[in-house]
Amino acid sequence: GETWKVKALAITPNETSATDGSNYITATAYKANTAITAGRTNNSSGGTAFTVGITEAFALTGVGKNLEVSGANPFNVRVAKAGSGVGDLSIMAEFERMRI
View 1 (cartoon, rainbow, N blue to C red):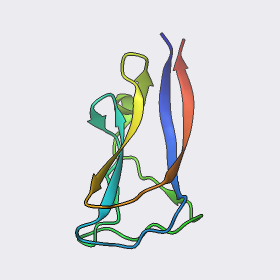
View 2: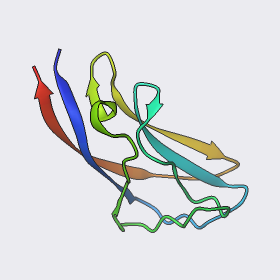
View 3: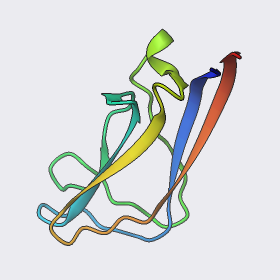
View 4: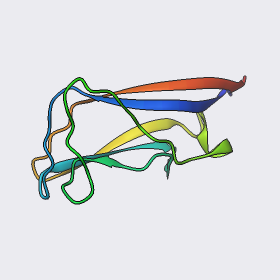
């Protein structure tokens, strides 16, 4: 099957969500079940607010083959919610075709 390499990711919040210690979200990108980004959170313990319409880079922590995704190892983004945390996010991804 085809293999693609994740080149860049960005997040654009579709709503503003302040930092909070009990009501927050954490978004993380994965290759299958392996995280390829640090979690982006608005938890008041180490996170920052999400501001509607402000696009920010979603820093890749994976390198080399860890960024290669395919049907067997799909790319996905998971959002974990704590309390009444709300997170309406748009994710933009850039890929490079590696193999067919």
